[in-house]
Length: 119
Image 1 (tube, one colour):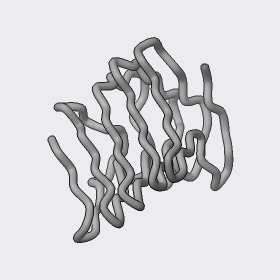
Image 2 (cartoon, rainbow, N blue to C red):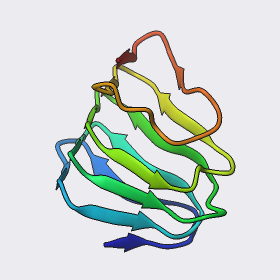
Image 3 (cartoon, rainbow, N blue to C red):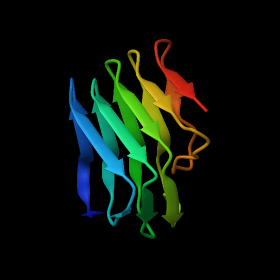
C-alpha cells in the first residue's frame, strides 16, 4: 500500500467507533499531506508495521488524536525523515501508546490536559 500527496488532507481516518489495523507488512508514504493519521474517537493499531517514508515528505503532524481515541504503535519507520511536522497532536482524552517507538517528525508532539502519551 502506498499513500501519495493529499494536500491538507488525511491518509488514514478513524471516527467514533472506527478501527484501522496494520498487522505487519510494509507500506509507503510517497507524498505530502496534512496528517498521516487522524483518530477522532476511533482506534489505530500499527502492530509491527514497517512504514517507509520517501524523501522530501512534509506534513502538519504525523498523527492527530482526539475524542478518547486510542493509538497503539510498534511500527518501524524507514527511509527519509519528515522535512516538517510535529510527531503528534493529542486532545480530549486521546491516548498514544508508543511502546518504545519514535514517531517521525522533526518537532516534538503536543497534548492538552486530557490526553496521554505512554512511552
